Length: 457
Image (cartoon, helix red, strand yellow):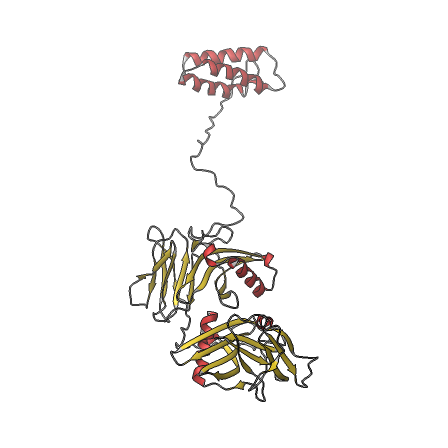
């Protein structure tokens, strides 16, 4: 111990002998030690101050002549350089930085929303609300990718949504009847890629939407082939024909550093005219809005199958999942007309289809969900108005404009169903469908053709 240390200790002992302890003995000593410390600039003196503090702690307990007890040194742990663990947040972080968080979704990519049509996103939100049975205000929907798909000319929007706090994702496709939800699935936590099988030109196609930060998106045709990069539509968005082995084809997404962030089996959808998939294990129940009407007219089995394949393509579902009921089949000027009701896991909707063998041309019209207890079905295809009323109906009358009186339509037959030539751009033309008694005061339907078609849609 240095002479300076001895001198300091002796001085403190002498002062402690003559001064009564204060109510707070430590505070006075600490103040003195602080003054001494501030006056010592050398590192050795700083060590002396620590020794003084250790001695001074026991001073009030000693008499002037009592020997100082041995006080063992107390070692304090140095401060850790590791940061203190912070409390876990209530929401756990996503398993992957590439995962889709419905609260903070990926950036939108694709065609500018204005090119997809005014109000398109809002109509998709309304369609999802209808499917969930809630008000549109309960649906929070964020588009992730949008395009105008050629050659069909259909608008396609990939979105993530929350309905009353339940996250989901889907693909909406435009049609004459409004947006169709080709995909509508729950969103699993940690999802890093949205993979959809959609109808294509000649074969079905895959559409993959992932984070804009990912690297390559690729498709494996089977378990023996190498991965093939898919055609990029935007950052993190790619497509390819779905032409691999349905049992083993797969999709892979790599991160920006080449690490694998997603790998899974590719989904399947039946292409138009393709082989149907295996039917479900149990037959789904027939919806309550399917009508139990007799078939009007007739159509060949092969044309009915073509109509059903076209229905499946328009709805974006595999043919194997589609159930149908034929309502009408007939011909006019060499064209075949078919009217169906179909369903695929929900309520039934109507579908009108026409086919002209002269050039192998067909036209399809997917309509809305059938309201309960419909009085008639209508559709306009190729300038022809198709009217299929309920079996108890009587005559069908038609007026080509608002000023003419409705006249009976020729060739109605005993089981009423009619095809009516309608002028291009017709507006205000009217339809009158009588009941079985022919009472004009109590018709099954009286109104404009536009109203009749809108009711079907």
